[in-house]
Image (cartoon, rainbow, N blue to C red):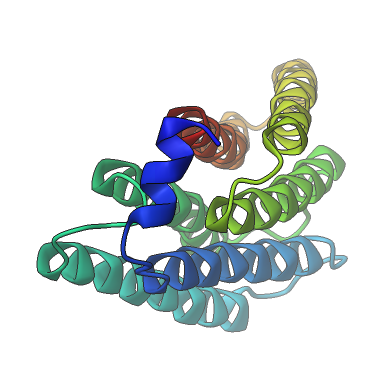
Length: 215
């Protein structure tokens, strides 16, 4: 057993932080799946119900993040470094904030038809969030660092694939869109969804650095 592992074993088991981080990751995945389902619908007439449902999930995520921060303020010894807990909590919350921002813009821009590439990006977002659920859950014991690193690589590869789809979609948008207003709207929507996957990659790397420090 390494020195870091021994120290971690001797620390008080404030498991509530792992419970909260796992709850946050699960909530982000739920939001990503709901987002994918809704943007996959054909010829949407309105997005009001979708936006309201996303707000509920976003508020739930905020409450979990605030609970983590409050408990960090009240806890003297944490199971992993408090900075890592806080960084991961904010990284998860940022993913959900991006999806919520898109929901607002779909209403504001009165989008009727979703680009096929956008549905593909939404699916990639779900895949990334599924990996995050595994990675966040792995922080409880960190017993298999190689398996954790494998899933971090999967997220990194997914982020690269997302970049490729994003750039192809942008190229097609600038080449084929006769309406400059629609072009501006869709560029912002693409930018924000691509950023959400970037944030997933960031969260995965936070898990990776935490595991390295505690191996």
